Image 1 (cartoon, rainbow, N blue to C red):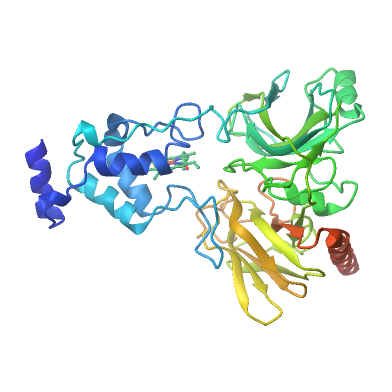
Image 2: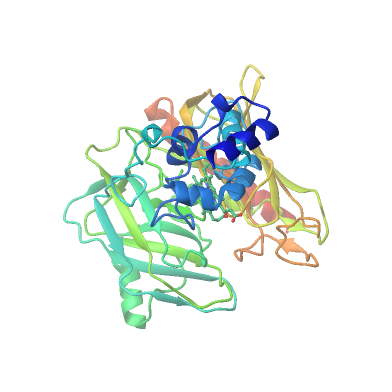
Length: 454
Ligand code: HEC
């Protein structure tokens, strides 16, 4: 086995036997560091990649999906600012996996094997401070329209808390498209649910609405924005939970119920959904406020998304000039199936243009929250430009309708949306209100302009 492996390596790759990668020495460190967070029991991926046998069984597929960059999932191209949650493999790591497979997947010396990664908890961020679950499962039928439903969960907290992270686990991930987390201090949602005698309730909080305090709160869809009171961010397909940066937190008033506002997309098979939510508290109150600047506003509601059947290059854009000095800590993108590219730039007052986020091959399945390595300084007068393109032709393999049909803005996942959310703080905390005011004006202007066109 060893001989033939070395031999085929010599023939295929033309390298000396000294360089033959082995699982224990070369491959395990890559899988442990870059794959095991998801590829372990209980996590999102369908199989574990922790043992030699796991990797050997799927060696060819591993070589293929790492070469094509389908795995680890990471949709952002290189841009001007590094992301701290970047999970792309280096070219050297990709080459090692290729060579290992080509050389016959040698196990190697047991002494070379690093210790398997340990995880403090089955949750990615470690042991949560509070875990709650929907008391009753909700039945999602096999067929039919998308469903928006609110579920009230009692938290039974006697003190105010500050929340630095929320993680979410659907029990039927094939039908859960996204969830927004809200807080209800009035008991209204719980009462509505109890009175109806059903699991969950429809209306107000579900789907698209204008929360008190403006649409900025909706920037929380993928959990990276949404400093608005009453919001705790959200979860979307493929998103990994992240803690807010130091000094930032959501307020969780005592006695609040947690409201999950969930969007379901029937999958062809009836499913029961009972979501589990993990909360992480911060021991100190926040020192700064944060918000999500969403462009175009409201998931593209007023951006004129109306894409003719067959159109290959439809696009929407929006820009916003920062009214105060800002520091950005994260960025996320949201759209449905036929979006193709995202491009977000910052043109600084000195006219230099920097790329904040570029996605050349959007995938509905991976709605990542990108966190900058360090705060990105964006001085007053910086112009943020966001452009999103769509391909509604039959050539787009991700088009859910064939032959294509006209697609407009809407809540169904076969409708479209499109926006980015830049999560920011004001560089000078007292200027936060001015930042909010500037964004509100942008929002009102966009809605007026849209109304005028109708
Ligand atoms: C963020 C979570 C995550 C990480 C990190 C991750 N995977 Fe995956 N992987 C998944 C999920 C979820 C699936 C199943 C859905 C899919 O194929 O997109 C998957 C599927 C796969 C498949 C099957 C693909 C197919 O077409 O059937 C392979 C092989 C794979 N991953 C290898 C890897 C390797 C190797 C790494 C590390 C270099 C890695 N993955 C890192 C989540 C992850």
